[in-house]
Length: 380
Image (cartoon, rainbow, N blue to C red; front, side):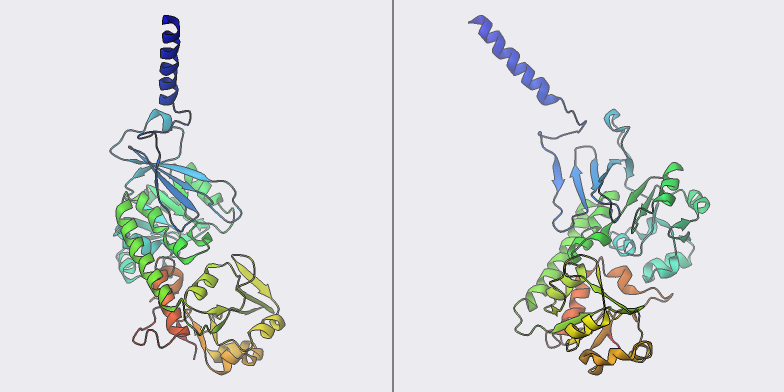
């Protein structure tokens, strides 16, 4: 009997020892990993531990099948021995370089625009608040995205560089990391839905240790977006929508699962290519687009054309579309900042609610009679 008791106690003790071990070197609380609920974005996740956060980027660039994890450790904490061989980012970040204009509004929403010390191609930044910092020499020009002036970058002593890439174009970022400056990729542009892109605000919230503020700001945006969406959800009339334009005899327009297609559907529009597959763009012949879209009610985002006259000079075939002859063409390319940057490319990712409001105004003009559009304007 005593022997059996000792066996039982040994079994319990072994269970306790095994339970206390953590083969993955994770710090756990109550045997559970606390994960921030990311509702719409598929490209990243955040895990909260008692003394640090683990930020995982599921896809860093198009075609990337490998995830990358970063351990965000407060500057007030000692780096645990179990994490010394991991990618470490000390938070809150106080000096940062970002490389896409889509990052700018996210910094501003968190009140962190003054932490930005450098940016490639500052002329594309439209925000008046951040332009003021550029004019006051608080934000340095770093050259081209894939040819960043690394000597100047070193002089700025950023604690972090946030990069992005449309393919595995990380050679410059590999070089930056070899100089001892941490680099992390932001792949918001790969998200398939408008709110998925906007939720990357929480990525920056984690870097600044402002998770609660980022969640609060994103919740405001998503609630407003969903509220607008509900207004036209059951609309009886869903106008047909054409998009894109010709480039070198090929018509490029959004695929059926793209975020643009989601925008159109959420705004109560009937996108004529909604059944097509893919999350990027389609490359079609003029004839196939004309066959399906000749009688479309509205034409949105016709490339970079600034007027109908320019369009017709480029291709007289455009006048074969009903939306062209009726003047129902709307573009965001004419709404620019003071140095020529297109506002849509900067702000639309963070504020999809404003884009949706614009599209509802276009497709259902009696719904928001007093609203003045933020991005789109009629092509004259």
